[in-house]
Length: 333
Image 1 (cartoon, rainbow, N blue to C red):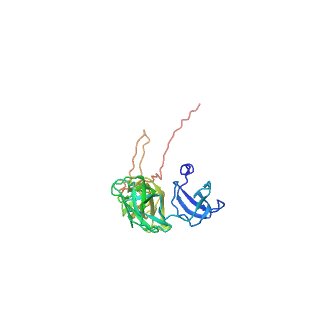
Image 2 (image 1 turned 90 degrees about the vertical axis):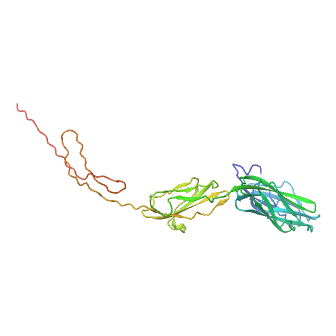
């Protein structure tokens, strides 16, 4: 791989092409978009040639490499079998069942059944193959039961095929990812909540197997594109503040779904809430007018009684009158 799978190149997938003309062109696609892990299981086409070369190219970039010399593709001279896992690198998202197809092939009329087995499983896991043994040219399904206490991590599973005293192996790199979101639950605003703030913060019960969350807020339980009020696909906390000011008395629906390396899970059942409606009233003091003495610095108080809850947005003193007096002294000389 020459470190092409690492930064700064970060090539994740490659295409594998075949030339039968010494590398003048590569018209035959052996595999496309396969993981850049340094190995791939392919089926050799029935193109007999002495001028075969392989080209491996980045599927998401422009670099490539070609075989340094020609090799031969020829008809088999000895009866033999081969087998190939569908993937040599994969995710196992537990507690869901894991399975993979193992394809087999026969050369020069080989027909003995192939018995499959697996080694390298983590503690508590068991593997079965169906059917087993398998007739060359047919496929068998590998199923793995990881049990209840498997730990997350990557391990190498070695699949062995044995027939007529011959054993062949293939290594599959499996990464176990826990994918249990059963504890995920929406919290507040509660389902059916009334008089919710116009800029609410939504809360839910976080689950450890989630790397992040997607959230949608809409005016309809269908969550059709035209009804979406807010959306975010990269929420890493267990809360989300709606970035807009909602309308008064607006009916809103919201839902969440967890995301990890296994992909996205199902949306939660949506909650609905209704925003508050402001009742504004103008109140006037009933104890006016008030006289303010000119002597000293007196404090004069006027009260406006508010009999309901809410916030005061403005207070105005609309009219006031100030009376002034002065005297002059005249001096005659």
